[in-house]
Image 1: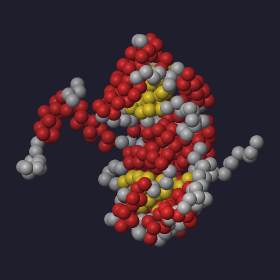
Image 2: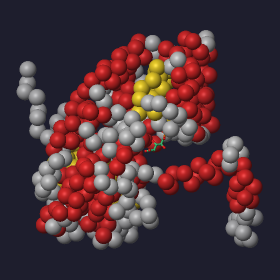
Image 3: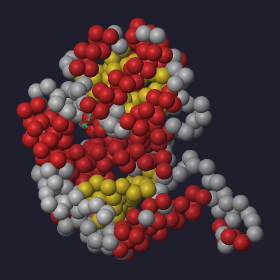
Length: 458
Ligand code: PA5
């Protein structure tokens, strides 16, 4: 047996941050960083009731982990496809991990619903599921979020029709929700669905390593114990107080220094398409955690080399308010895929026989340098490979860096009051009971068109 690789998987490369951010500037933040770490660890900051994810091993005890594995195995036996129904933190983590790691042939597909209100999306999904044995994992902590509740109704009807009735459907539906309260908890109890708990002290965007993420990830055939072990290894490493020896603290300090210098956007960029939803998950984590009180870096993403032929122009030469974080996967486990020999009509003779991994790496190195020289300070988080342990480590890396960064900035990194604004308006427009007194005002407001504001072709 080969020795397990116990090297901690993330290395932060800050070479292209200077002169905006240097190791010395970060070292000068040590006391502030220690303060933010302490605030997080001791629960003395805003949102302290939502730190249940800090210890990934304690968050999901052995019994719950085994329950998750058993339910996943049972669902796999009784279905061809799992649809995860959720929005925001209730689905992005699972999708990030599954789409990054589920490469094995024959693994059952996992699809997603309830993350938008598009009739076409859901109609197409329902149609594609006809004739398949469909399992559902409906995930909602509050149990009242409109998007997943709507999708659950639509999909439940399909499953009940397929299984001929609510009784048989029970075997194919699992609800992940608040342990004690909420509409979904009550409904699941009435219908006799199997349930998994979301702890009070774990908010949606910090829940990927809880039952919220772990059930769909296990269904997809991914090793949830390795994922959790990676997160636990990162949690242990996170205690190092010196930011020059702790990439989590370095990253949190760097983004705050950049913000204080007037940078307004952080682009998380990768050269690996499998990380698309990891980028989406990261945007939600930082966007909902820090984007309040009219502050924070706007979290954006780019997928290279694809976006080098679109957004790349702006990044290189547009407004200079961009900073960038590269996620670079060294690709130890990737297929090298050497370029075949051929005549030189495509002018690629110089690349013949060289692996695609080397060409992609040259593209990454070239981009990081060009962006730095174009005025975009950037750092790189290097990962040796994409596997469950490494990804668990990376997820926890960002989860831990995010509230430290938020506390440095002075915001509550665990609430999301701004999300309510559209909901209140939507409920009033749809005349949800209890909101109807606002309906007239909102209808008037959405239909009001100031003179000259509606522009039509003649
Ligand atoms: O991170 C969060 O807390 C949010 O994105 C929630 O996960 C999202 O709004 C869904 O909420 P719920 O799980 O209550 O349906």
